[in-house]
Image 1 (cartoon, helix red, strand yellow):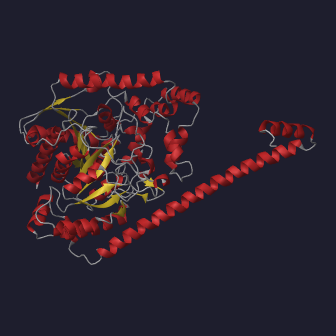
Image 2 (tube, one colour):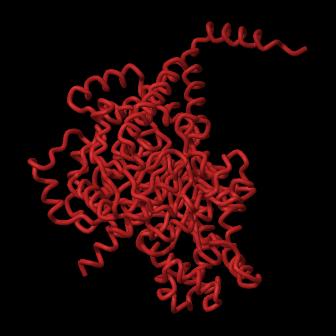
Length: 595
């Protein structure tokens, strides 16, 4: 007859009470249990390492195979330098085949990634797709034969997506994301996958799986994040257009830092099906997918191709709102607001000058540009930035800690994840103390404080919704069609501080919080005069720890790209693109007149 467990336990306790070595026995059992847990932990960590090494070897093998395929390609530069329209005409006429174009961009992508580490692996089906296009009669879609690069967290059939974390290795997607299906229907050839920062919650880019990505304009600086590899590859000339994502500037920061174009759409304008996101389930602030490109014409073409009827058929959860060509092609004068201060971060002189240059160019194009001083109108500007960061990290990053329990972490990632485990009382005290001298740093502690109740969470969402109402009223009070503003408070930071700069993303966070579409146009480059002014306390005096770090990073920033955001009301992507078009043309006319 089996003895009940409770009797066994009682007998064990009775035995130990009377045993002269009870203390030693208990200590031995505790030590054995602890050692067992340590052994199990290290064993699981080793399994993750083996998994990571196998995945790295698989990516290297794919890259080697692509390199062998294009080893004898000699005329790639002449092909990749063609404008997107010339490229389309050459493909249409047959003077270039889709396979020739693919090989040219594959070779160039390899060249760029040698310096920047922007590509994580080639897409092996690209060659078969190109050959099928060449064999098919007629011209298939707006993107026929155009190679398109894809951010690593976008689903591709037969490929895993990891965000630089081992947990996703080997979990191959069963189908393409909707956005990839759409561009394939339009004749595009997805050809490489591009790097991302571990967890994708950074304006820098490094992960234990694929390594560190650098800015093609200055290898010591960040290309931005989290669509990092896209920014670096397109900015370096290795891709003409690509697909990225954004929840807090992940399209726009890389676009500005690498001197390219992008469009962050309204949440439900472009399908998110097949997008890997760690904020899934958060309905207050949502991630989006969007196009990136080396020039405006390429961005416009990709935007039209994506926002086409097939996307709304493949994802019927979206409002049926294909690209409105008639709206985009309007040439009537617009009333455009501008600002250079969001109420939180001062912009360095180069970033202020970019907005003022854009203002002058748009006025020369016939538009009326007026000061949109929303921080004064709303009394404090984008102070609900604290609501944004609390909502995006509502679980205090618990989901990510669980995903990375046995993974190797980048130092900045480890710092942020551990930060979320600090006692609430400590974070509240630290928030109060640092708030006595710095008005931005306390926001960081909000991520570790989290929410004490559902009521507190609802109050935070309500606060953000109230801000949305106030911002729209301020916008409408000036009868604005669009707004131009900075992308970031300074030029691309050096990599030693880039991973700390997440709280400086408020110029981008604003339009994720509001759910307004926003595009980026490269406007100018940092000059020596800009740098001199940045270090002149009469012109620029940093007010918080992040402004001080960015100022330190401004040294040596001459020649880096600086852009502006062009913003429209929700679901008015065509308005954003109209402003981007007119600004690009006006800047181009100015450049030509100076030569």
